[in-house]
Amino acid sequence: MKRAMTLLMLALFSTAVLSGCNTMAGAGKDVQKVGEKVEDKAQDCKDGKC
Image (tube, rainbow, N blue to C red; front, side, top):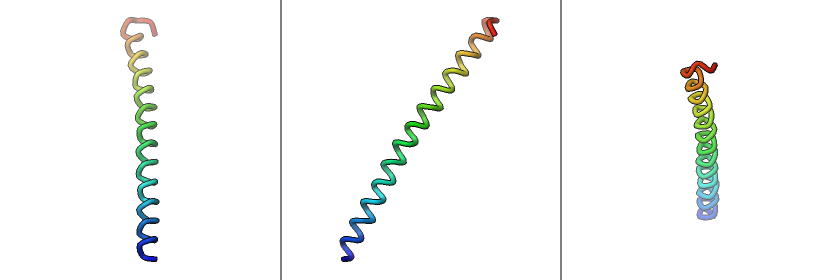
């Protein structure tokens, strides 16, 4: 019984860690896209087009 509980806890922990990594990777991509848009807008304003 103790071994089954240990394996269950390990499986739950592993699932939580792996889904957290995917969530952070997605958030990083979103932030990167926002940064690119801000950079593009700054470049347009630098050229006097804003």
